[in-house]
Image (tube, rainbow, N blue to C red):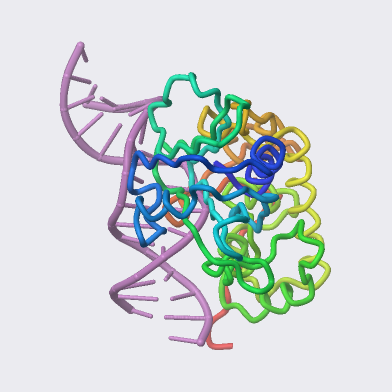
Length: 291
DNA sequence: TATCCGACCTGTTGGC
DNA sequence: TGCCAACAGGTCGGAT
């Protein structure tokens, strides 16, 4: 599933293969893929035609392509959801089964950009950029932990204020962006923190340690092209990443913990799963009532 | 206001 | 072999 490292791999691919090219034609094959573009498919295609793609940018799991030539301050915002792919394909390559949007360019390179999405949780839309260069609709998305301007002190203070648990907080994109279920479980395992640990109990050193593990695991995944369990995540050239072989917690139910050999467990959690080591990641003690 | 949780969506897998 | 339920999970919006 595309989280920050996978989206960054895609962003880098787009920078190489799509940056600087001019859009000739856009074909929307499934309306749900552009559902966040409220003006609809015809408007989406009309406004994109003739635009020149700038350098792709990213915040958390969102990436966007600034546009020139359509009036200032417009961009294509993309979210891959759970199964979205942005592929650069030859014109004559057969259409993928779940091809949703096709972008052709006004050049002779012989390739086009395709948005493919099996589960249609992702999508493309056009938005204006705010003065600080961010698409207006993602102003609520926090900076991600690989952003040099990420404010660690403010993050810790926000955690302490919350009456919630640590994994919920990690998945809250308005608090810290780019972390999804996989890297949350990995970082918690590395930090020896149980997913239900109340955020208000985290000390400043524990927050620093947790952020360090989040950055480490994301950078390690980035270095090998991200995590691919199946064909649902690939880079713009259709290649898989290799970080699934390095996962310590996610998807390893019943397998021995790489620290203590205790079999890892999976627990249903918020309509998904949490993987953890019952020995290294002790559940929090219940709060005593009436004290 | 803060937090929680169901709905959305489709292919795969496992049980019967 | 075929049917069905469970599962995967990021984001949004309604409920509490």
